Length: 260
Image 1: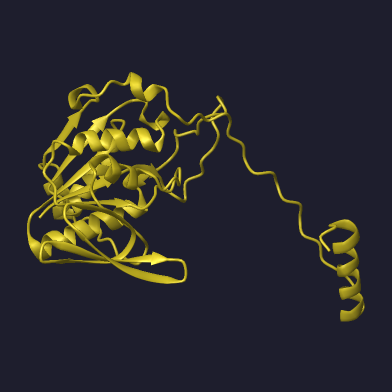
Image 2: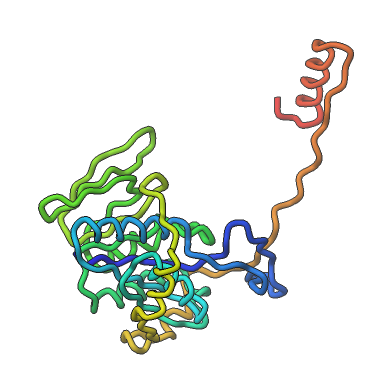
């Protein structure tokens, strides 16, 4: 099987993300960059399918030069080749713009299955994978916690409110990952050494037939970034007995907080 994984490099969740002086972007100088956690599930599932059915795994990403580090990490995990669409202002594009770029790349790549994270932990827009499937006019199954390839079709268990549902689709198709699908492997030292020799094709928007101008006028504009307001410190209700404390709590909720 020919499997493609859509990958994004994001700030590590433990990194402190500050607001830049322009008030519309974040500080990145001291940020640790990693593979989007949901995309790690995608890489792992692609490798498991490859191990079970044969074929190859191609990693596709959009970003700056540093994004190549995330692609190389996926190659060290066991993927076969990578494609990076290098763009110095890609972080300004909205999810729909990124999806258009990825779809343009995929039109020239053979694939039976595309796997993407259900969302990226930096912008949380849940959009890119589904939009790519729409642009390519292929089926999309999201929030997958289990998949099986059976007789040239894919059967997926996906989460819904209150349970799961089983959906079967023809191939090619695109699925997005949910926690519980697998446990991503670590890149081994031999894998890291091999990754240095695996092909990583770096392209520009012009190389895939796109004009940067059509993405500079994004449908989404960040007006400003602000930290949430600081919460007031908690208050301990004092009293000689439980009854006194309850009475004081009820009074505070009614007269001060005005929630009852």
